[in-house]
Image 1 (cartoon, rainbow, N blue to C red):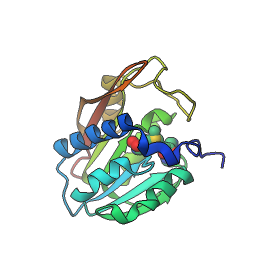
Image 2: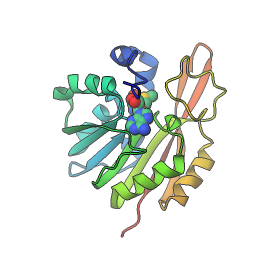
Image 3: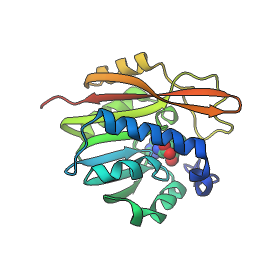
Image 4: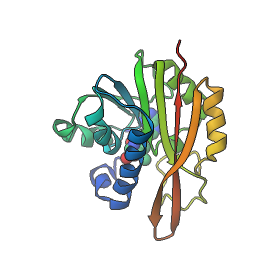
Length: 203
Ligand SMILES: C[S@@+](CC[C@H](N)C(=O)[O-])C[C@H]1O[C@@H](n2cnc3c(N)ncnc32)[C@H](O)[C@@H]1O
């Protein structure tokens, strides 16, 4: 499939210890920053094999896993029985396809650099969220292009967190904050990762 840029790495994706450690750090930071509860319905954007959502699952009611890659979705479905909340998987490109639903929060890890139009996807996120809902997005700080050793559809060499925070504010979110929550160690360098959190207003 044309869109399945992860097909060759999906089955070994969770075996990379540094990747798992990074998602551990991100999930812990989300749980520490946002008040999760067992009534919440959450969307995980670019859910991949489910590394992030399986860590958030014990804290929420339901997670809708959205990913364009069938092979990554297959890996997630293979461990669905071990996910500690209700799980729905949706194979779609959220930059172009419509999802007519509302959520209490959106989480995402290491996916935003795969999205060309950041203001566009932030507008879509805003429309998918209920009043008082949260946004929690983690991705790379600016890097020199050495983070990826292959092209899996990369549009940004990381992001300046302050500039990203401004885009989140421009999309209508409030209480926008960011923190460095992880550093991915690779033989060729160290790659800091930030988490941005924000909220929709009361109405
Ligand atoms: C680097 S992986 C991250 C997976 C997971 N969030 C994690 O941290 O392990 C990025 C994922 O985003 C998905 N993705 C990229 N663009 C997408 C889009 N437009 N709509 C939905 N999923 C997308 C890819 O298929 C891939 O599974």
